[in-house]
Picture: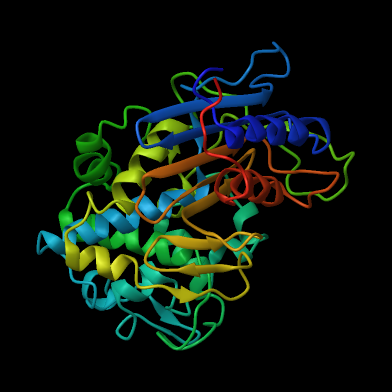
Length: 362
């Protein structure tokens, strides 16, 4: 296509390889680079109909939800309705208690930065199979039945319980549903029409979307494939329940990284980074955002997320001027990759690694 760059032509090749060698049903990539908007895909949105993936397709974004929740919390601090150093106990009395957990010593900043030491309820697989639907309080109770990993602020550890609690704090501080606050503070002002947090037990994605295929994280390449498109996201909620599009995510992260979402004090707090442990190699983490050092040495900023049947990455330059969002409508990869993260890393290296020419192709 006219206007494509050598890098984006190579991205197309990466996506084709993800389908032919990685065995994923479908993959898409959307790029915002200054005024340039570019989209490509490979494979299928629906293996039964043969429909291709399209720019307007919505998908479940998993832990990219955490960036939206952290941004909302920081905007509430700017409004004076919440403090980053407020103890969790102030907003949720008696909720964080037991097995070394103490909400009086854990702050909102600890939650958003994954430095609370709170056990991640997602690591108790047996507990998450006891029922189809969960309340946030039930998810926190799962975490409280386990020992805390470390003292607040003394270490770093990825825990989705932190963001379930952050969502609960937002609701308590505002008196409104988290979905409403995300709309008021972020998706409404930015015009993100394809982005929302499902309410209650809503299992649908709504609007145009790909089917979401899952092997339930089983490593066997011949494992049975399940269609998980209709999914109760109450077990994920503020930690990973949102739905979006490639264009919306690029727009959101472009504004966030570019300093157009948060006042200066909140921006500085969000982007005070520390190295991660036991998470994605080569990353640092702030408040709901991460940086990723690519194999070639360049660093990109954003967040990734996974949920049954959908894996996504949204990363770009630190100023937000150049963004790339990638989504696989599956939760596996084979061949050269152990999981979709390897595919995403290859695509990011192609787009941001610096080796590819940025000159437009005639």
